[in-house]
Image 1 (spheres, protein in one colour):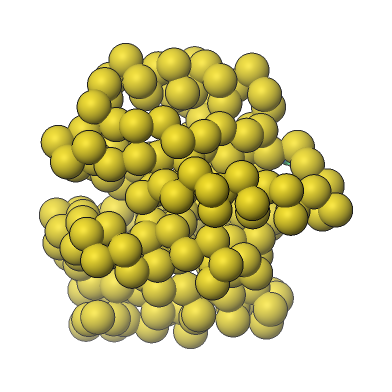
Image 2: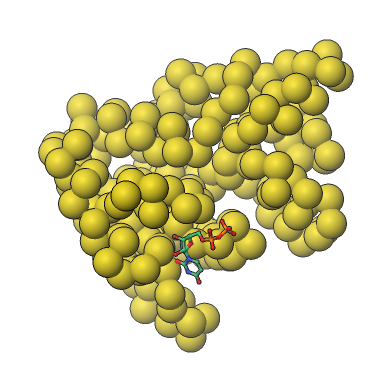
Length: 195
Ligand code: UDP
């Protein structure tokens, strides 16, 4: 991938269209990917915590979810195409999923929020199959049960809406077992979608 390093974080230079095209191919090949939509808070977390930086470096795709990363890439003469916001990427992928009949698993937020998110997304993307939902308030001891639920659902897309410090390490830890083509942390997006 064409990359630019900012604070040692390898950002992909592609804009939204190329990013979506690449991930569409990943879904078609069932090729697992952890996607990190890195915002300024996450970049600062990576600067301060080597373990978090490693997670960013080992992700399959890091996209610039903020004007700061776009600006910095221009400043060092290796510009990224544009900002790729996580919330927008979620919707772009759902749109392709609606055209192609993909399945999605929603993991995270409070129980009533994730249920309402599913309802809203079903309304907007009726051809997407909703393979499973689960709230984000589970303990580490329940990880196994959550993994098994996702494995048996076999989704094309897995959106994880938990706190930023938690969702990326969680996906990184289990990505080889989950093996979903698109595994992406979406932070507070379910709260926004649910309204
Ligand atoms: N969340 C969750 N489980 C947790 C903590 C948070 O599912 O243990 C959800 C929370 O309900 C919200 C999302 O994660 O939908 C983002 O949470 P918050 O804004 O607190 O995290 P931040 O992104 O600020 O780190």
